[in-house]
Amino acid sequence: MNVNDIGVVIIGRNEGQRLIDCLASIKAVTGKIVYVDSASTDGSVAAAKQIGARVLTLDMDRPFTAARARNEGFTALKRSFPEVRFVQFVDGDCVLVSGWLEKAAAFLKQREEVAIVCGRRRERYPSASIYNKLCDLEWDTPVGEAVACGGDSLVRTKAFEQVGGFNSRIMAGEEPELCVRLREHEWRIWRIDAEMTLHDAAMGKFSQWWIRSIRSGYGFAEVSRLHKTSRFRIWGRAVPSALFWGAFLPALIALASFFHPLFLCTIIIYPLQVISIAIRRRVDEPSRWAYALLMVAGKFAQAKGIAKFYWLLSIGQTARLIEYKGGA
Image (cartoon, rainbow, N blue to C red):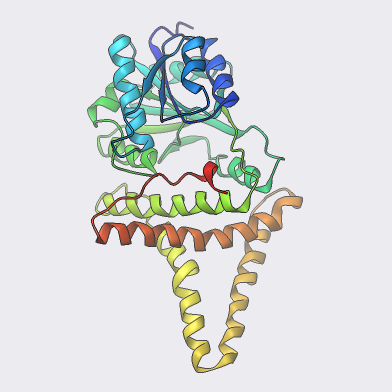
């Protein structure tokens, strides 16, 4: 299939060999590539130029968000290749699966009402850690019409430009937020049954997973608040769930225990919730209990992220980048 009308925007910072692998997987299909670098110090810019990508270095004196990086990459791509009708956004820690662009573009050409198509993003090393495994499970979304996509997806430029691209002010959850606005304009989002990318989370520490969960909570709060009146509002349940399990219930138990120590026994609700999740969720047996435990523990991190968002909102500030790969 002809891919002359497809371009690729990659964003990254200090991805090293992961970025080289990413660029090589894309270069094999198309040379219409823009790499957006965010102050890398590992030679990423030189590597991208050597492979043949057009490189855009972000001005880091301005507030950084992945949304801003993708928007600036899109603008640069369209300036260099105005004939591009579809843009594949991909993170620099991902490898594009052979044949994906052709399948995704064919789908968009057949379905004019679809703005974004995504496929199966897999974790490259799921057995390296339980945290990598959790990422792989998170990305195993149902095939068919979807409410949102992730960081890797093929986007119709006409639709992207119609809604003004990503919201550059959003620190996390920019892809689902974009999907809300697209759906409000009668566009549709689709997940097809095809392999799309291999992602390298490189997440081997609990602290990294904890920071990633804080970022998720922050994104839940920001995006759900931004579209609280939309009929396509998302994460309406995620915020109260995180606040209940991660903030309200612990505070209630602590307060009740102040009046009578026996109320401490109610903390058993947390291990019971772990058991319930382990029984209900179909996960490989060796991962079942770790998965359930982290899902419950993650509510505390998400609640922290939500609290961070509303605290910063109250004082008129926004969060700096919450980067789990830099988490020690």
